[in-house]
Length: 390
Image (cartoon, rainbow, N blue to C red):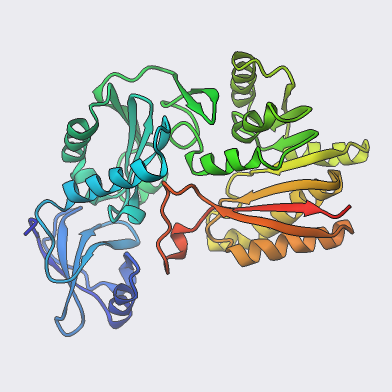
């Protein structure tokens, strides 16, 4: 058995949530325990003392329990076994991929643990008291299994503060250079692991980037482009790509990536995408492909109405810029905006734009970012491929 450092009792509501398979139990459904260390592995019981499983305990977060196991036993080597299982899955779905996610938290039954690979380097996030407590063991097992040249912790997300943990970026093993070069879909990318968005790249869009190349044609507009994940993948197959991002640093890096890959048909523009979409519409511009991959507009439920307005605005403008027969590839990474709601928003935008569109394909995050069935928080990325009527 793994070392268990206490017992925590949950309410009827919390017990029902666990039985449905959800890995989180909130503080309001937990009887406050005494003497349980921060981040400890605890046994979880129901109102009548029925054993429900084992979890990481957090003394600070609203997510008080992160379930590790439903049942009466948690193996001593659960960390090693689950890491091995996660790595084996990536061998199936990301064989030969230089940049991918190796561990995706709850999706790999290792809640709050993120491990990303960029060539010979790993980036780790321990986003709860539980995984922070196991960080040294996690690093040791990653070194043993993967022999990386360096491991960096990108423990700067706001989620750490909710756990009462320090937000920091630092070296955990070996050495990690300021920038790393990886190949995605045949395109060489320059990645800043220390300061870049997420852990360096938007790895969850990797499969969508490459799928877009099968649709893109003519003149392409890639808004909210960051380093050009979508635009660089389609550039070799189209007439011209215009990449737009509000970050001067991201635009400069995208320009270098285009030059390093000999993509002379890529134009990089620093601009607010909302403003530029309106400007391009006013000047009568048309594109055969429009790609919209904005940041999360809704980071809480309270922000959903405002986010819906933002998504409708950019999709309305994107559809007005789209030539007949052209493709709109539009994304949302806000897990609070559900897939059906996102489709309704885009449909409303099409109606207001006065155009007819067909849904060609629904996509989600790459397979190295597993979605747990019945846990909507793990299905956060939506990607719709739409075709405007002729």
